[in-house]
Length: 227
Image (cartoon, rainbow, N blue to C red; front, side, top):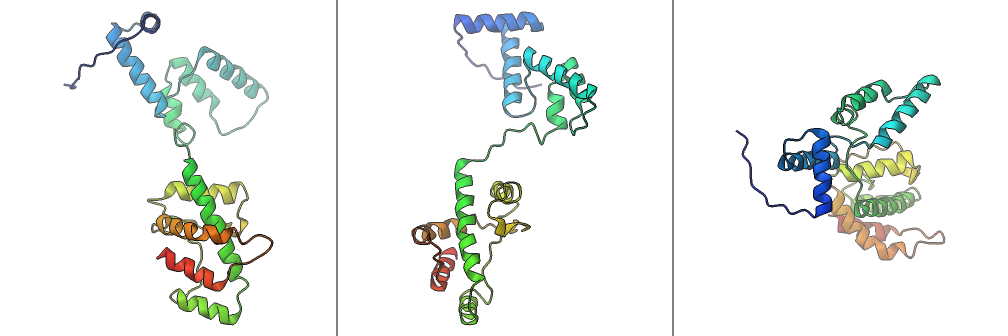
């Protein structure tokens, strides 16, 4: 038996009237039943488990479907499947079938800002590495366990949102082209270390306009901050 909990809910007259009208139109057994159904529908909608279509949305979809079929437009969306879901009231079905479209994930502005700062920093670092003299190369390797530093991406398991933002910026928006065709999956957490580096890089970044490059010693100091 499903365990229930009693909740007190107060509605103003207008909202109570809207609930009553919805109850009559759907056949809900009582106000309490109507409120439970509305809560379930609302939660499914905001969590991406189903979609809510107004009468106008349904009409617009059907008109666009008819136009697409008449013009023999070939696309990725199964318009007949969506039409059947709309006709049958199965509003959960498109969300199940097309979960890549119906979801509620939105990139956080703070994550976007962090990724842009990290890519910008590594763009400067790798651009400078391309110009190293043999002596500078050996100096930098000696300070970095024998390897030249390189942007390794983000952890696909724990930092997937950051990795997705980086990929979209580079592969879809053609920003930071230096990193095109990179895997972006570091297979180990990097965001905390890179964040510390960008904090240290910020005052340096302000001095790098007008073609000025990073110094090798500055790169070494940034790598120390990373650890």
